[in-house]
Length: 216
Ligand SMILES: [Zn+2]
Image (tube, rainbow, N blue to C red):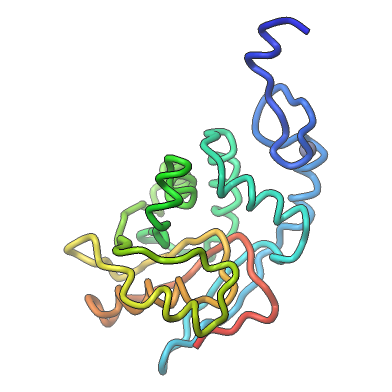
């Protein structure tokens, strides 16, 4: 093997096969394209319901591999790839501000990036001007990794963990996150936005969710 190959050894983020460009090999890209399908869920918060668009079933192993890599990545090509996927989940005719559920400080400290914010920023830049990225919400204090917590624990874990990061809250907002399962993180972000702008029209887009999803 030549030194140049070692230095620029590029591998598919899903199957680890050698590739010449991009983040995912042709085969894995085809698999992902075949799985991607815009589905809708409704998230109920108090008297209001919010539409959640998502592309993948969270339990699919290929999807989980992609999400796992995305969570631990600083790979610009993968962020661009994710940006294109997020774009597919944007509700039809949506125009407005895109923002993300901010990651906890630990995630950013470990990997250097907010793995939802970066792809969203790329997606908005590449849009026809209909999408504009703004950081509307910031995270405060410490919260635990959500994965192994019950619904009740998640609610407690995200309670009072978000604050508005911007003075003027726009009317049309799309909140983006990688995974929405119980919906507790998105729920907390929505509540924080509504505190500052009651008539905000909020929608949610994510990559993966589950059929058993319920948000209260
Ligand atoms: Zn592959």
